[in-house]
Length: 156
Image 1 (cartoon, rainbow, N blue to C red):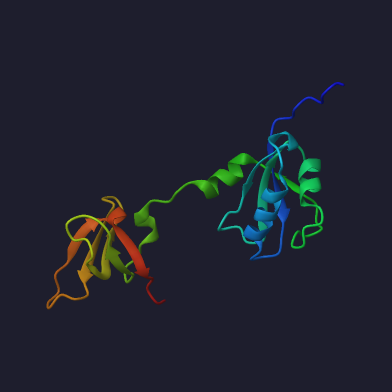
Image 2: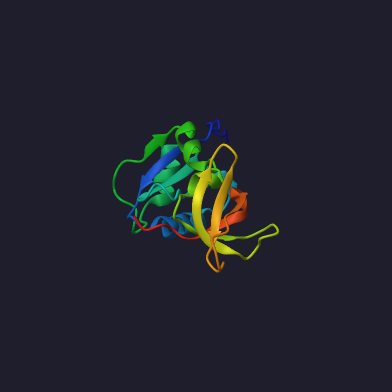
């Protein structure tokens, strides 16, 4: 009995009902019984609503594993370049996620536990300046951006 040559794994995009990405990924995961099935990974990206990405040997393997799943759309399974997915997998620096007016809490360092409003974001220094909410008078505190957690985003 001769075995087929193993193809290099590629990523495929499967269209699913928006909001059901994790459920579909769990169902697919449950269907995989061994690594010899040719499915290597399942990705659900927060920025890509309505899509599940599957790393597999071939389009046929993806089609077989997703067949009959309720929230999988009947559209064609599309190949996706790894580079296109990597853009979504890179972690953004904490300072990129902060904006003036956000309400944050300091989660580490000497000012741990203090919460307040962001009054300045210094991206080159990776630093934010906070005005504590419970201070009797305005007393700005500058801390590294990775030491704060957003409690409430500013109202636009």
